[in-house]
Image 1 (cartoon, rainbow, N blue to C red):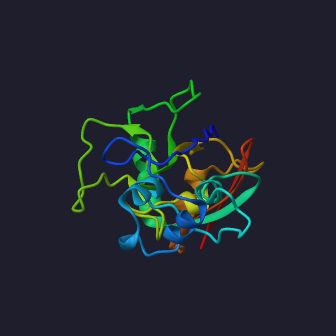
Image 2 (cartoon, helix red, strand yellow; image 1 turned 45 degrees about the vertical axis):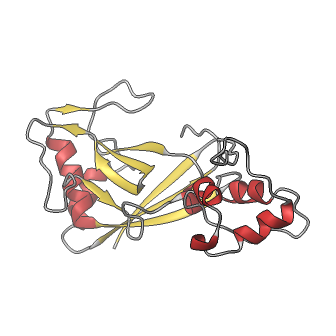
Length: 211
C-alpha cells in the first residue's frame, strides 16, 4: 500500500487573510453542528469525523486531522453484496485487456479496492462494450455497504485515497483455490463478501470471508 499523509491548513478567509481564531474558539466551533460552523471550517473538515479533543490540546484542528489519518495498526471489515462482487470479478476474468495498477507489470484479472468517493471494489478489465447500469454507474463497480458515493471513509481507512489490487487468479492456499474460484463457489449459497483488512503505514493483510 502506498500512503501519503497530507498536512492541512485552514483555507484563507474571503478577503485573502487566514481566519484568526483562538484555540478555545476553534474547539467551540468544532463542537457545533455543521450548519452552525464557519464556512472555512466546514471546507477544511470536508467530511472528517470529529472525535473528542483533549482539554489540554493546543491545536484542535491537528487533533482532528490525526484522528482521521491512519497511523499505527488499524483494522476494518467491509461488507459487499456477493453477487455484485462476483459480477465485477467475472467482468475482469472475461475482459480481453486489463488496466495496470501502481507497481504492477503483469496485466492479469484483478479486483481493485479503491477509496476515494466512499470505498468500493471494481474490475480492472477493459472491454469495448462497457456500459452504465440503471443507476448511472458501471456494473462492475460495487460499493461497500454503508460506504457508497458521497460518504467519507477516512474514519476507518485513514486520510488518503488509495487503490489496492486483489489478484483473482493467484492461488490463495495450497489447494490452489483462487479468489475467483472462491467467489464462484460461494455464490451457490452465500450472499455477502467480507473484506477484512489489518494495516499500518508499512503493510496490509487482507482476509476474504463469504457468508
